Length: 104
Length: 309
Image 1 (cartoon, helix red, strand yellow):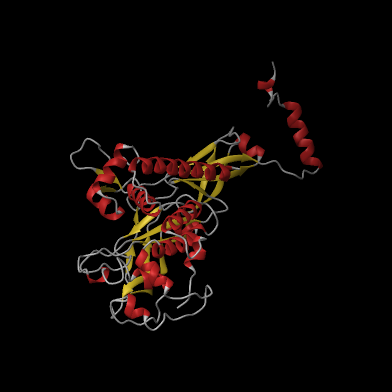
Image 2: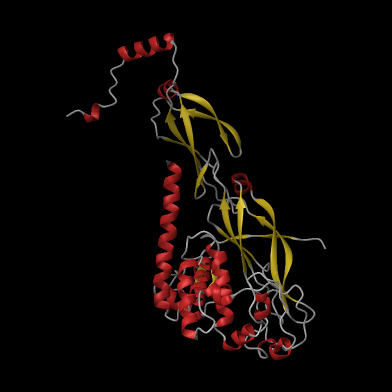
């Protein structure tokens, strides 16, 4: 059977996805998504809009949230939001570290 | 089928209670979870620990596991003859089935889960992809060999080898994530197919370093090129160009080459920055030494003027 080529989509800040798609692709519930937004772990493009849209990069964050929720059996989404913020800060610092090391 | 000692993987005794098993799992998850651990092989270790916990946390699955008997890890074994009647819903073949598949098929208890006909989305998969700098710059077509769980004629999930062909768009950077829709495991009963997520790693390049869509490279200049200015040939990922170096270029100064960085299919593009480095010749013959001496005598330049009180 001939295999078809599939195009990979960049999960960065240029693409936008509706909240329903983020829920479907992350495995989080709408309520959990709302708590993560309230805690600042996820940011809709326009928080005041009637229907939220997110940058495609939010899929990465939301999937990390779902993994941490499941794998550590975390019920408290506020605690999960704190974990996510720390995780993002570590990622940012590591990226900066790699950038600075490359300058040496 | 190869035996795995789930108790040993979690570091608990076979008589451990549910609380001990949960505690052992959480301790190991903190150590090996790929989102929080940087230990070598953490992801593989976490998968083993999670597989063990998935079975041992469920009383019925644990009973089914215990009934498999005790074997040395890695030993080939077959479940006892009466095992399938006790724990399986239908007759199936153990061929090509591993222990994780076996207990995944007992989802929701020995006789409950598989009867559901509700649409169920296919599992998402993640794969690490290592690209050369050139592949990241120009885009790439890659083939991935995956092991996807699929239901066989007997209704049982088995991991089957699948080849997936993916077009990676140009302009991806190290650490970026990509989604390939519908290339995860097949959905069940009309559920959507899962997605494939790619973690991109871009190999370092001896000349170029990416920062977002911008590229940086060192531009070594002779002292006279920096002082007098020069037109130098510069290799860029898209081909060689002539770069005009202005007179008086200082070390560390960035010379911008517009639109020569990484570019994306949507038309966005970064710049290439050539960072000037003043390189001093290590070997100078008598004539050159004399010329540098003349320059010293003629020049009033004091590179340490700012240090004087």
